[in-house]
Amino acid sequence: MTLDDTDRRLLSLLAENGRLSLKELAAATALSSPSVAERLRKLEERGVIDGFTIDVNARTLGYTLQAIVRVRPMPGQLHIVERLIQEMPQCVECDKVTGDDCFIARLHLRSMEELDTLLDGIAERAQTNTSIVKSTPVKRRLPAFLP
Amino acid sequence: MTLDDTDRRLLSLLAENGRLSLKELAAATALSSPSVAERLRKLEERGVIDGFTIDVNARTLGYTLQAIVRVRPMPGQLHIVERLIQEMPQCVECDKVTGDDCFIARLHLRSMEELDTLLDGIAERAQTNTSIVKSTPVKRRLPAFLP
DNA sequence: AGTGAAATTACCATAGG
DNA sequence: CCTATGGTAATTTCACT
Image 1 (cartoon, helix red, strand yellow):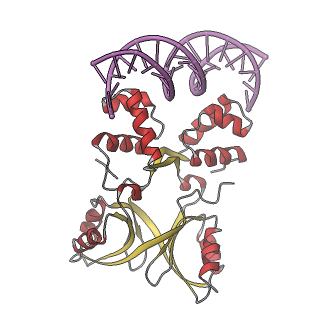
Image 2 (cartoon, chains in turn red, yellow, orange, brown):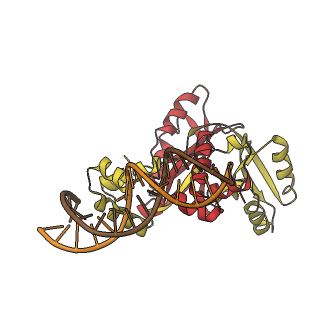
Image 3 (cartoon, chains in turn brown, yellow, purple, red):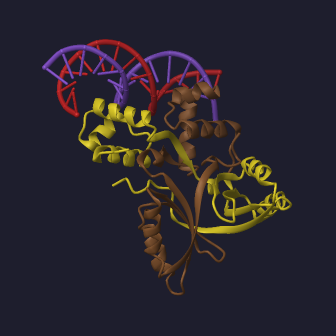
C-alpha cells in the first residue's frame, strides 16, 4: 500500500506512455534497467498495475455522442436490468451505486436515435435519467497518489 | 471512420494487453509484422488509438472508496467550480453534461472523512449529490465497434 | 535495493516482389 | 500484403557493491 517516489514516477510515466521500454524508464528515473524491471514486476504482482492497454478515441469511429445514464430498475427488475446494461455494446462503463439510482452507465453512441432506441429497450424495466456529455474537464487520469 | 475486422481485432488485442509486440499481434491476426506495423501506424495517425497506458488499481494503494458526484454550481460559480474539480487530486474523471447537474465526477478516496472534507470544500459554491460505488458491472471497455 | 556488463533473446524497419 | 534480411535493441542473468 506504499509507493516511493520512484514507483510513482514509473506509474506516471507509464500512464502517459505504456510502451516505454525498461531502458527509457531507467533513464527517466536515474535507475538501471534491472532495477526498473524488478519494480515493475512487484507493482504488477501487487496488482497496482492492473494491466497495459490503449485509449481508443470513439469519436474518430463515428461515436460522436456520449451520455451518462442513471438507471433505476423497477421493483424486481434489478438483475435483469443489470444484465441488459452489461450486454449493451454501447456501454463502456457502469457502476452499481448507493442512492435512488442503482446504476450509472456511460454510453457511446452514433446518434440521438441510437440513444433513444437503447433507452426504449429498458423503459419497461427501469426509469432512466440521461445526461449528454458536452465536454470532459478531467479525462481519465491517475488519482492523488501520483506526482 | 471505418475499421475492418483486422483493425478491430488489433484494437481488441491491444486493449487487453497494450504491450503485445508486432510479432505477437501478427501471429494473432494471421498477418505479417510489417502489415501490422502499417495498420497500427494508420490507426494512430487517424487518432483511433489515442495512446498507450496502464490501468492502475487504486484499491491496492489504499483508495478503498469510490464515489460518483453530481455537481450543480450556484449561479455565477460555474467556472470556479469547474476549476476546483479539476484541481482535486482525487478526481480521476469529470464530464460537463446537460441537465440540472452540470458536472459528473468520479472520485477515488481513502476514507469517508476524505470525501466529507472534499465536498465541504465546494459546498458554498455548489450543490452536490453523491453516489458511493458498490460494484462495477461494466469495467472500462471498448464500445460496440469491437468484436 | 541497486549497479554494470555480458549473454541471450527478440524485435523492427527495410527492400523487393 | 508477404518474405527475407540486416542490424539493432530489449530483457535477463549474474557477480558484486
